[in-house]
Length: 458
Image (cartoon, rainbow, N blue to C red; front, side):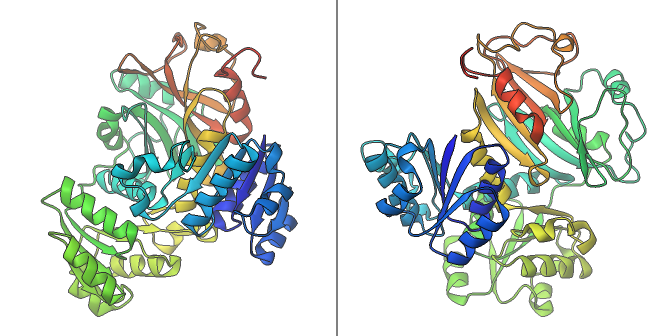
């Protein structure tokens, strides 16, 4: 597949890194010579210095032969125009744009991005995507990661096995026997910096991070089985009143009327603006690194500190300060991959990485075959994939134990006719079933083959 990426920042670099390792033909455009030089030096991609919306630059990057353009520059308008030019002049089939400004995304303007007006096939709104992720994490304390699939009926939950975890040192097949009515499957284990796909005889160990795919209605029971019965936060302090912080506070006001929320916002004008817009949220103007402001926000009595500023270091330090002052737990927004491996050491209970959220959304549209959703985990070590089985899929009507799946794939759940099924060796995938599974990066191509659209697909 030939892909053009407009924007060589963190997200653009991450997408280029992922796609180039999968033997795609990738070209990256950015106005910054230093960013383009860096991407040329480190990745097997072509880099072009120029404006991503200019026809001559797109032509130079090979737009006339491109299968997809992904516009993720810092500017919404550049991303939109790049897609328009790619469509009008080069007939690029798939156009993806990152758009931050919510004024473009109102439901009453839904026709704006239609083929007749400004043809963009996929719109990615990072603030909304990340905000939804934060809300899911708040709703399920004890989960390190939460993603929904199959009309929100299936969930992938990442759960840390602490010292008092009841299920450690127990073979996974015994857990199935002990809890036969629990629709939950451990599909991946992150241990000592390595992600493995377990066999039924494998055991969980203290310190493991287990990736569990389960029925949505069984999530809390699954967390309890792992020893995580933390109560849902009812007193929350949010650091940062930007788009994400405001979105999270607004949604909590709507969904959880009994939850008390306080926002600390450094910019006075922004603080006044969101204070006027929110109904029950208390907004404090100041720095979340200021101990006095944190105390004024009653951080010592808070259940959760959610750090959502644009500065990773502020998010990390304010989260650590909050816990030192008595806050029960914290959740931080962290953009830089350099910090992700040290979150536990730094005192961060949980984090959300916006780049990973955006890349996951894009991968969904890059994957071949009938792939409905993708969520990347552990900086690309594996993907949680939802795929639909068609008549032509070689996986249909075959007993799972006879499929001889590659070792890097484990099926977690099957969604059929509105019901979630836990797979076992005797299960069969039927036409139109949705299958949620974990696949290590090197096994993703096998998943595409198993759910291919036609026999001629490969």
